[in-house]
Length: 209
Ligand code: 3PG
Image (cartoon, rainbow, N blue to C red; front, side, top):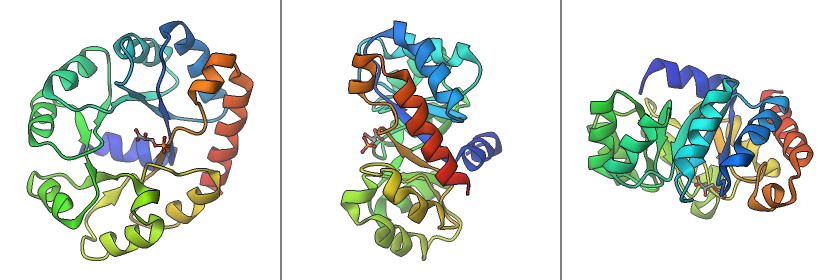
């Protein structure tokens, strides 16, 4: 994990996870997120035009933009070509981690168990995504997993909303939390950028106080 990404995540605390079907919405979305105080975002590779969306959001300049839902080394390559500053995966796949290393891009794999965490440690990583955080047991599971691995930093994601975020962020091992509630498909369909700005601001405020 590069120090750069650690400081980006530690400074940002809140990482909006974005699934964006239409690249034309990338610029107003980036505007709304930055107006709400977001400093980073993850563009999920779950839509056909995710690379274009990533490119447009990275070009915006106000956000450190990473790629999410990266499942294969090929997707990692495409993400880096599109300007991803980091790569996030829902699970741990050795080939993705190795390719990201070769490409010189920070990678945050998902882990849900101590064994998966130990595989990440063995690969030399010390920052992981706890996924899916809430269904796994939330902060109780985070506490239990963090205890034997004091060197690890977590980015809990999955099922987190405004009500849960301060509980996670209070844990010293948590760099940042990820979540999609600030900018959903419904917001984008409605063109509700003000709603995105408002939810982002609420989250950022709650995460930094
Ligand atoms: C992710 O890709 O990290 C998750 O889908 C985001 O989780 P959430 O939608 O429950 O916030």
